[in-house]
Image 1 (cartoon, rainbow, N blue to C red):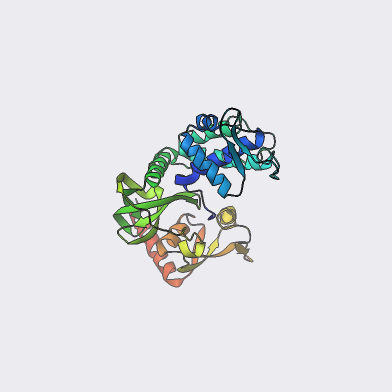
Image 2 (cartoon, rainbow, N blue to C red):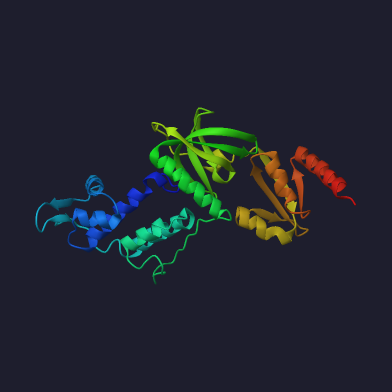
Length: 312
């Protein structure tokens, strides 16, 4: 499984499988109707889930008739408390993180089904709290739910997209939602480009759902820095020491050297010139762009233009 946020179209099934396994680990047996009521699905869905667990190597036996039910086969060597200790807390942490952006509370309800009383309290051995929400939580939750439904139903999505290269209208076969670099993205097949593309949710406008489509085989996106943020400009800057905290926050410790004058000498790669220039300008005069020379000259022209525009 790729090391990205789970595919939302399949995450509920995965969560339900974990929950069913937790139930069977902690009680002798359960019936299909009981599990169907507990997880608000059909008996047919429960039967498919049991088959999936069997295929995953967990031997589950079913017995029809009075006194029958579903149970883990005798002799299967597995610690029946494995999902009620640290591993269970890790699962619950993940579910809490999904609830922080879903806007629906569905994962809180699922936590109650897995571990009653766990959704509203912080267990004594819980050491991680993950909140994936952003400043755009309200609008973002609506987009995530909309795209989640489109992925689950294999429906085309269309939207107006804003990017540094301009604005465009896109029609996309949505494949999965990705959380990376503190932002949410849609990975799907762009019909305009006839290729897979990654779209940032915050840049989408006028989302609409379209006709059904047949999903095509797609690989997970390459999320490496070199692929998504290629280094086109190597920038060197001299930054005031009072801004060192920001350099460390954005690029980590050891990202700069101290000059004999007590200033920070910083070097990093940027994808495009606008990104590099905007980054230098954001220091409000406390950073000097040294290299490359052509960007230094352009920064001087921008400074002169700003000065003329703001003279009284």
